[in-house]
Image 1 (spheres, helix red, strand yellow):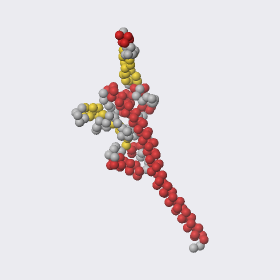
Image 2 (tube, one colour):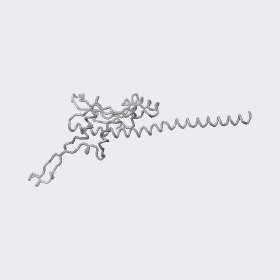
Image 3 (cartoon, helix red, strand yellow):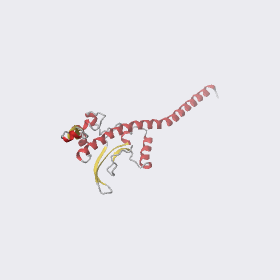
Image 4 (cartoon, one colour):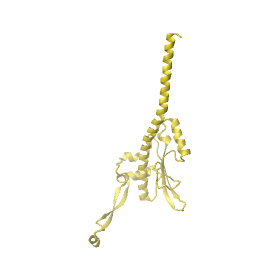
Length: 210
């Protein structure tokens, strides 16, 4: 073997070693990057779906039911108010009680100034409640409301809001996303995404991440 050919072979072998090392490194790093990015995106989706739950619970407080309409829910948060009670005077003060100085009065407070505390959401934030973070193209949370008859024959209002994994992770590693969805459905028997509440069973508005 002449010297020139030997040098060429050494260069080719060196490139093969580098390529194999890069492939091995990617095989190790890709799942780690996927897990890290999944956690970041899920946190954003959960943060917003918690606000949706707060809005739905406030709507139920006033109307004794939930709503499956985004327009109705967002308009309620932006423009409506809730009624609260406050006590004037102390019920422990017998003199004040005897003189009728202790009483309870009702007052109204804007929904948007109450239900998200200590966070403060702008009008734009509230209008964007329906939008799933990281979704491309921009997708809305799947929102439903119903009246459910429980096993004890009690009729209760229920709602659910969902964000499927494929809505906010579509640009991530395809095979790892397929595996995540498959595990959720077939291993853990869970909704393949983030969900709060359910229109199929009474869950006390629990989220599937809790």
